[in-house]
Length: 157
Ligand code: TYD
Image (cartoon, rainbow, N blue to C red):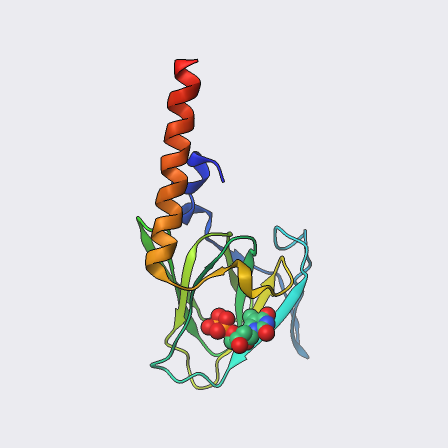
């Protein structure tokens, strides 16, 4: 990740709105990899039956990008890049949140009927998860320090 990217990490978390193909029979929403969302979909999982006071996620991923969609019910997603936080509401089945790699995320306030669909750019690999917030901050700071050192040494050359 380049320094500029780390600075803009939270700005990369974006709400996406998908087309609702609705008629008298109901609605149909299509999410195609590399078209409606900015990556090829390698993994799909979904989360349901979480109580309202549960906080899920609490991790960052070195490689995986995600799009989260509440296909039923509602939840909130809090994103954090170590400097700023933002909260997004997932409350309609045709909207999603895009999460870039290396952003810290919490999913919470699940409604009883919440079904949270998660699309990912990578297959599951537990080793690419950072599950400790202090470690996440260390990784992000270390990255920034290295970038500053590299910049200084290239200016001195
Ligand atoms: P976990 O990462 O704790 O879920 P969340 O991000 O919602 O808090 O995953 C719960 C369990 O499911 C854990 O044992 C790992 C497993 N798991 C997989 O095997 N594959 C997957 O793609 C995911 C997301 C989780």
